[in-house]
Length: 137
Image (cartoon, rainbow, N blue to C red; front, side):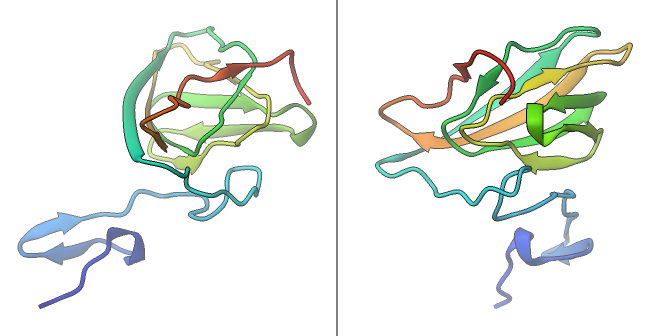
């Protein structure tokens, strides 16, 4: 029997007649800012969201307490990381969001921005909700 792990394949693979195409991911074991991260302790819980940011809309300054995988389904996301600079992510790209670092997401485009967000958290306490912060670091 063939051992198969989607994270290990570099190109499109066939498995039992099913096509598996990897999604480009900037880094697998570090955040977009190069931070190493740990999986939360306790009972694990995965939370998945479709996040819509309207044209011209921006998030409040916030930070995340747990790993967040972000995949851009449509549009372009600009993220301001303050002293770490700005990053732009286009449709089809994905990354692990910064942890414990204030940032702001912006949709500078003319169409809705759709991001699939997958939080790797714990059942209790709920660490998924972004934590407000005062502004850029």
